[in-house]
Image (cartoon, rainbow, N blue to C red; front, side):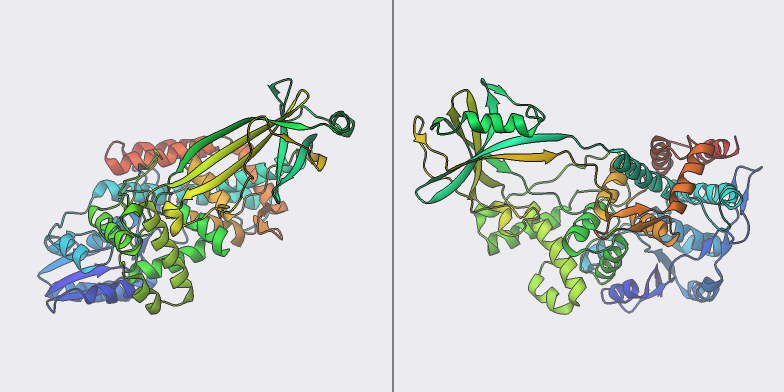
Length: 542
């Protein structure tokens, strides 16, 4: 008998369908070991060695595994293809060391028959660099939680807690709120001329005076604006320039964890935590690839399947195979973007519940769009001159829909029109309107924009974004306004200000990002666990 170990019963059930009778698949039901709950659990004097203990609810699982491993000829750890999955495999191996000779590690990014078969033919040993990186993260979080939280109990209130990453996320929210409160609006005006020709209404905005482009605040007051309107009263406008330019718009790349969470928030209003719950269900049932990733790379066989689907559904002129380059220097974890693992979408949608179907369809369409041709627009810029004033009308006309055939996240206007206009033609505006504006303060973060900012600054990793947002709300450090945007509570502001005052470098955005880079370097084998954790501890204890 061969034994294959995964984390969840759903994942185990899906994999069983693809394996023969010689295999037995067991789920660990998550983690099996962790640091102890009621003590630090880290030997500060001996290399910051962690003291891992079996989680009480996992004892039954461990006993079952011990008995099954005795009977197995070979044991495959098929936990998730990231550091956390690697660590779960290592913890089990450590607990059941007498059976080390039976252990092999396999990984796959989609739960399909082909992927599992390939993984079983390419087993490897547990990657201790990945394990060390995960342990360093857990130890770092524990050091900050246990050694700094008492400061909050003493200064603010009992049972509060500090966190290495979420405290920096809280800082972003608090500092944004201060920017909003300190913002002073600045008034400015624009001038719009409205025309009609052949029954088509269009407008143009004042862009130049004396052939020089206007700065944003060039027209500062109502009087300034009314002077321009008065000066143009009864004046004919001449079409002075017509410029046309072809614009090609590339499709977006397939989803990463971050972009999936952002788009799900914008499109469905789903919290990051809920998006990941539904995505996890889809992954474990074999419908999509692994969901914790910051890579946009796609396997060759998936590119071929996308090509076949596009040619069959839309025709060859819509198909264009491409690989996207992952721009973030922090990229690690899984090696593929989030994409469909099954391409028979009509059949798949009938097998899913409502929320699963919505998310699968979104992932499917985004991936298919990424392998389609560009959308092509004709950009038309009309300049109309009256006296020393130049107005401009910009119109974008869709010439070929390309990837927009299936995926249009921005809701691009494809129907806007301009009447035919010739250089030298004279037009009389039926209205010239002064428009008052005020500069807007920065907006509060919502789930999408906060995740985007965390990713941009290198704070946290794909597997942590949803947890960060959830913890901040559960601890009542932030709440949400009527527009579902984050607002720091008084408690959150107090906690943030105290942590920054006492530990300005530790809770600095740049230091947190550098810490994440150090964890990445441990995973690659380029840095030592001890040195990284020691630097963090020095900053805590100084």
